[in-house]
Image (cartoon, rainbow, N blue to C red; front, top):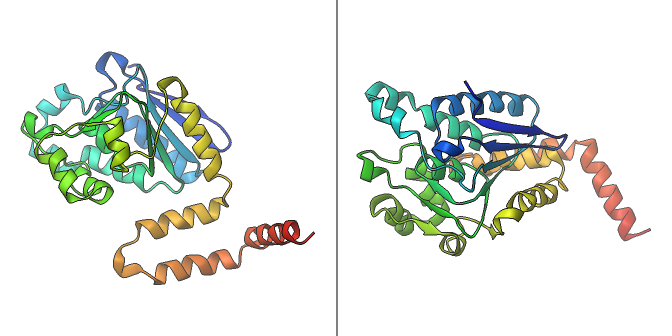
Length: 245
């Protein structure tokens, strides 16, 4: 079976191209399995993840041919839900470079990223009720946190599909770039992120993911570890030496 992902590894990040162009990069079981394998690598050796889609489409949704055959046990297994939660929980930031359609499961994959940047042709939303199902792989709560309840209800209940400009206005995406510059923009964003200490970036992700009851204790515990870090001492010493040569 042909692979559904094109993966390029570098020392600092991993670029993943969803590559089922004939199916508009619909997320099938093979793609789920390959993304889980990639998460195995990134949990063991943390690096920034850049996600993009081939052929001018990010991901048109879950594979409808497979989805039609799924039953209650498949829903309870959370096939996409657990994958997207794993991607959201990766130690280092995840950047989704979203070109063209990001619908249904494709939108939910983008919602799981830490950053979403888009091309002008972006169309993002969740039309699942038109197919007799709900957006059950994270949109029901991630989208509300990202854009607020009123807009989330428009998308999830009334089938609203956002354009790039609308998504930018809602802060669902943070940048818009021409399609042929989108991946370079994602790399530039990754470079800006990597000016920070990787240990501090990983700690920040853990703090951001913590529940309200865990604050401020988790913040203090993460900071305590970093305060003992040689990297913290080195970075602060370099800052002071630049400021007071």
